[in-house]
Image (cartoon, rainbow, N blue to C red; front, side, top):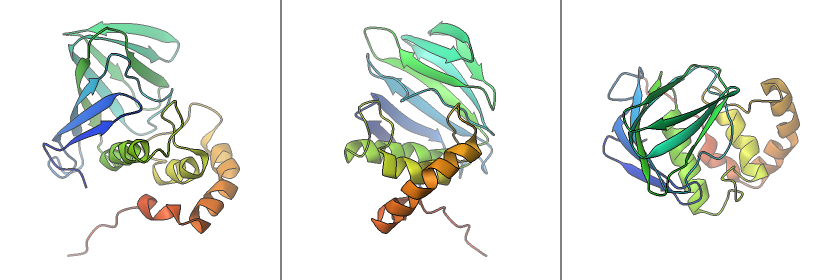
Length: 186
């Protein structure tokens, strides 16, 4: 579980994330992070957050967003809001690191998604693009289905296509990191 002040690094995507306010801090309403993107940093690919809105306040540098069919170049002082269900991706287009304060509402399990992707990158379990390798991807898309989806094909088709890979990944013991946390009963 992530904690306020924790910093994680993804060496493949060039992302560094500091958790400013976690789901535990906000009763699940919000996750707030500071994102630093290396000069060549980028999110691994276009994606959709089916239930979450993301708000990026650029603090330093220049970021390029693809939001649906629109391209937005945002600089320090600009804010870009990505509504739930909207296809998007982003990259640093400057020569120096870019920083943004990002608010994600509701938080859901986005902290776990972010820490999992950084761990996979450090363990060489991602492709050069930063996407998890196929066996991990099959488990990842199921575990984080509320937080992120591919823009196409539709989620049920992705899950059907991934089912054989997920079964193989479980047989190989890769599933322990993809267990959904259970709420403690009082």
